[in-house]
Amino acid sequence: MQNREYPRLEVPHIQADVSDGKGFFTGAVKNISRFGLAITDIPLDLDNTSDIYSVILDGPGTHFKLLVRPVWETDDGVSKTIGTRIENSPWTWTDFVMRQETLSNRILVEQAAH
Image 1 (cartoon, rainbow, N blue to C red):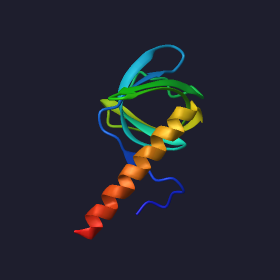
Image 2: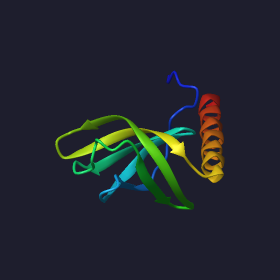
Image 3: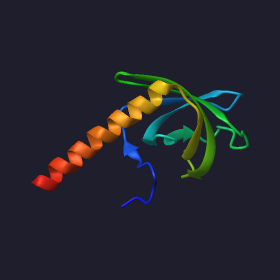
Image 4: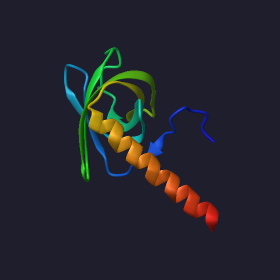
């Protein structure tokens, strides 16, 4: 069980276009929460000395522009995964995440009932 105030939620099929201020790099969203997200499959070229990244998220029924601050990073020699804290987001982001939380809780309740 995660020991977080806001749980991380898996969200499939959301692409993340990340800019470090010098270039754009495409990755995939691994998980989200109200105040953070993890992005995977990012090229190693992304500048890890940048304090803040501009991120555009696109997926089925989703399109968000966020400013995020990197918190942690791992790389496997081919690509990297970054964990970020959201510094600036539209109010629709919180609404989107809250709907995902409700959906996730409903699924957990249904699974527990079986």
